[in-house]
Amino acid sequence: MKRISIYLLIGFLLLVSGDLIFWDQGIGAEKKGEYLLPGDIKAGWKVFTTKKCGVCHAIWGEGGKGGPDLGTLPESYVSQSQLAALMWNHWPEMWGKMAAKKIPSQKMEKTEMADLFAFLYFIRYMDEPGNPQSGKVLMEIKHCSKCHPIVKEGAKGDLSPWGMYMNPILWAQMMWNHVPQMEQEMKKKGLPLVEFKGNEMVDIIAYIRSLSSKMEKVYLSPGNLQSGKKLFTQKGCIQCHLPQGELDLSKKKDFPRTLAQLAGMMWNHSYKMWKGMKEKGMERPTLSPQEMADLVAYLFSTQYFGEPGNPEEGKRVFTKKQCNLCHSKGTKMPNLSFLKGQISPIFMAQTMWNHGPEMLEKIRKAKISWRKIDSKEMVDLMEYLNRGMP
Image 1 (cartoon, one colour):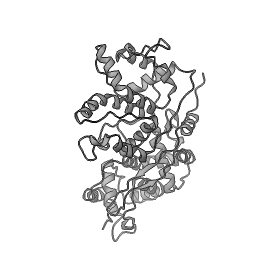
Image 2 (tube, helix red, strand yellow):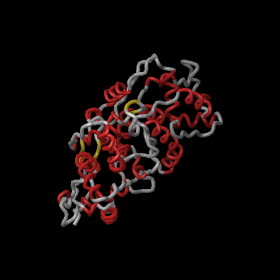
Image 3 (tube, helix red, strand yellow):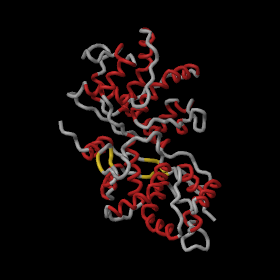
Image 4 (cartoon, rainbow, N blue to C red):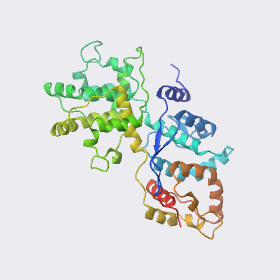
């Protein structure tokens, strides 16, 4: 069987998955509440191709080899600010490679950078392909086959029909609703509680899908995060997961990187969660596929933005990274105070893309090295600039 081009695959995923709308929470003291940033995934894919990003960057193994594969999942979740910091650190090397490959430098509008951010977020939101053979082994190791004899088609507990569900959100929804029943069956059979780590859920899904290759596939688009935010309160999630509380999911450092990993986390959490709900006298909520999709969209959106910055720390970053040598009173470059309240990770990335080569040349003439920046420094720096630097 011929391998399908990754570019056709991405186009197909964009078609069935729909558009995601991201909240740009903004940074700065003068901010007047949240506003919607229309980061369009399909448009971001177009930006990725028209700006020649694919010449150096592969996605899921296909494309250029000069830079990192942008489809490979990072070890931890990547927020807007982390992505902006990664791009900042990558710029000098990128410009050098573009010059070597004679790739023309094309200006980028803010909307184009927003779309590119949406696309890069999307390809990490989806799951890497699982390993069916590993999934088959895991079905035995995790004792799943004790209740789900998928080798016996049509038998009680047969999971092969689940293979039609291509989006892991549907798996998360079905597992969520069936956990109490499954827990009772496991107790009856004397089976230990099961937890899923890393990509184990992805591999199990891949194995079950391999048994259902002839079935019509069922897709579900990512949900609406505004509806998900309402459901988070209506379904009682907020009673335990209060913002700024001990169980605030937006502050969870090991938040899942993909949909399948989120399904695994919800399974792992279910035992403790049901116990806590009983103690509070709460009814166990059930979720429809669309409700689960909306909740997932909301949960992922909370991770997209990261922690607010510290302006005092940002002031120190501004000096430490020697930004003040060019951007302060008495210098030829603007002091940036006119940008008060306007700066976001997307703005930083767009500005660097458009003005980076000029900035790098000035830095070289001044015999200053390019200063790398981590995500926390980026957040603090943006907060300082948004306060209106003196």
